[in-house]
Image 1 (tube, rainbow, N blue to C red):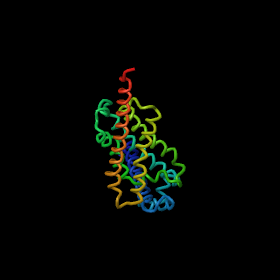
Image 2: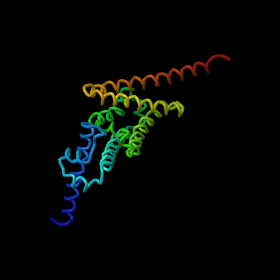
Image 3: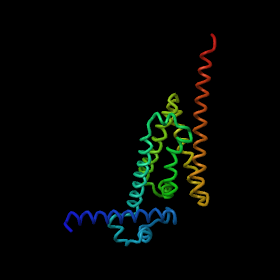
Image 4: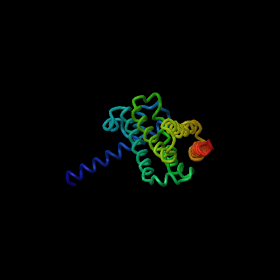
Length: 221
């Protein structure tokens, strides 16, 4: 094996080892909670030596930052797929189709990675830039679609609609984490149902408002 091949093999093994450490950290977060997370515990969960762990990560914060960064990359990939949808399609979709395409991939990802919810734990204040960035990625995706479907809504209304659409599943997500036996149904049935109902309500309100405005302008002087 030449030097280049050796370097590639080492990088590949290093990448695999870091992924195993991140996987171990994610599992331990769920099992033991943020307050009990330690580098030694992560190393044990990842079935690696503490020396090997420190070779890749200087401390627990670095591991958590790498885990948050991995979540960020996954969310960006999901959002990028939604961005491939034509603007005209977003306008013509039913409300159910909008939620299926825009929200369901995110909900399914979080269901598969429950440690994602713990990134915002108060004990992890150094992760705040990562969690803020992740929230912005999701908010921007929802805001983009709302602007297309409700072009006459004010900037204030669009912002509050976006915050509500993002906030509704957040509360459900935390209830899912607290009630694991209901987690799948809460995330994949009830959260989409709540989003469909809310989006339907605000769109109906805007249609009715536009109709009232039209009717009022048609009244004789």
